[in-house]
Each structure stands twice: as C-alpha cells, then as structure tokens.
Image (cartoon, rainbow, N blue to C red; front, top):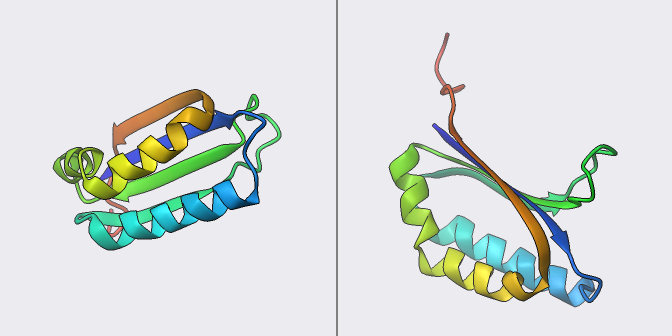
Length: 103
C-alpha cells in the first residue's frame, strides 16, 4: 500500500465557498481515480500541527496507483483550484504495510 499525506496552510482569503469547491473536487477524485483505497480532505485537529491546519490523506493499493493519481484530470484540477490559496505545503509519501491482510 502507498500512503500520501499533504498538509497545507491556506491564505486568509479562503472561505466556506472555497471549502465547498474543495469537497466537490475530493468527491471527483474518489470517483475517478483507480487504485484508491481511502481519500479524505479535512481540518487538521492536532494542536501541534505547526499551522498546517488542513490535510489531504489518501491510501493507494500501490505506488503505481499513486503515480496515476498524480497526473489524473481530477487531481490536477483540484491542485489548480487550490494552488493559489496555499501558503505552504508539506508532503509525506511512503510505502506502508497492507493492513488489510493478517500479519
């Protein structure tokens, strides 16, 4: 499995309408991207998040599915929409154990 986490700080211009659009993009990603096991955009509730107050977290069947997602029309459209509002971003990518199978 492949884990992809993106932590973001947005500028002060984001509002409820911005987040409505982002949630629609997230739904599009979920419906269009193959090899996706889990996808979530939401508020980071950690008090030690260093100001990275929103996150996209996703799990893919493998690194190849993640690579396909990176260039998918749904993901590139979401990035194009969000990009102008992102002040800072931190990304974590890693191959992780498959928790669906017994250890």
